[in-house]
Amino acid sequence: MKSSYCLFVWYFAVLVCCVLASCSEIPPVIPESNETTPSDDLTNQQRQVLIEEFTGVRCVNCPAGSAFIQDLLSLHGERLVAVSIHAGEFSHPYNDSQYNFQTPQGDQILNYVGQPFGYPSAVINRKLFNGEAILQLGKGSWAGYIEQEKAHPPVVKIGITPSWQANARTLTANITVLVEETVSDEDIRLTVLLTEDGIVDVQLTPKGKDPDYVHRHVFRTTLTPALGESLGNVLVVGSELNRSYTYQLPNGWNEANCYLVAFVHRAGASKEVLQAHEVALIE
Image (tube, rainbow, N blue to C red; front, side):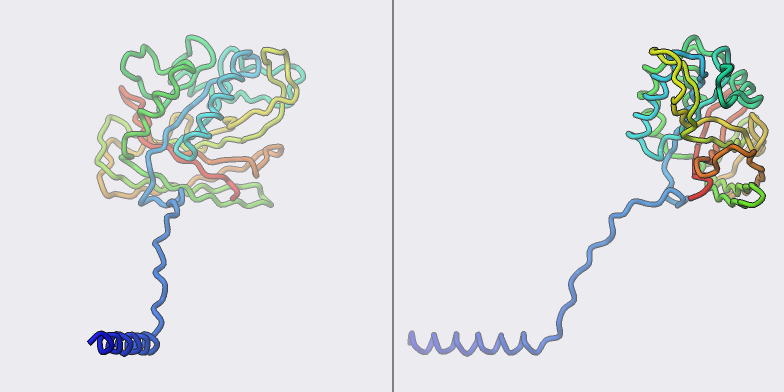
């Protein structure tokens, strides 16, 4: 009985091997990609927070604020958009400054959001947070309010498609606004602006004047009016708005380090930014 059982097992094993050998090869299962969605994918765009830093080359405490913003950008990546506006009492250039970062538009924006109590100072999403007296915020408040704003889903999404004509030094910014939730206010606006990164020039620091200081995210100009272009008082869910702006870069601006920033914001009793987005002028 035992030998018959062993013989049966042997025949069964041979049969299984033959069947397996005759089967077609089964291809391997390829797992789905886990790549993150690119930043220009409007469908999956996340909330992006705007921080407007108010600074100046004569502001001895401002480099600490700028360094902290770099830390925040390292943490939040593309979900944080930084703009450094040279306006106010410390923004006048030195005699040995190569550049004057002051602009009429920057002065308008500062007057619009209000003067800071001290420096470093920044405005986050132009929002008056609970418990705060003004829009301007000291450095110790930035991180917490950025996290708070990131948690909200975007009610609009913004696409920016730049075009650069090198010979004429002309850029065209094509802006798309997709409305995710109906928004109504006495005035809703779109602001499009230009920044330049990595400009080396004089800056006052706690160790004295530094001629080799690297200025980051420097506000250069707006392509819209300084306080934005009106989109009306109602944005209807599901609608798409398209705008196009053209600007000629002055000589001396490094187009390779320039960025387009666009944001949709309220402009009535509240100045709150609903969504911001940033792209490089030249990829």
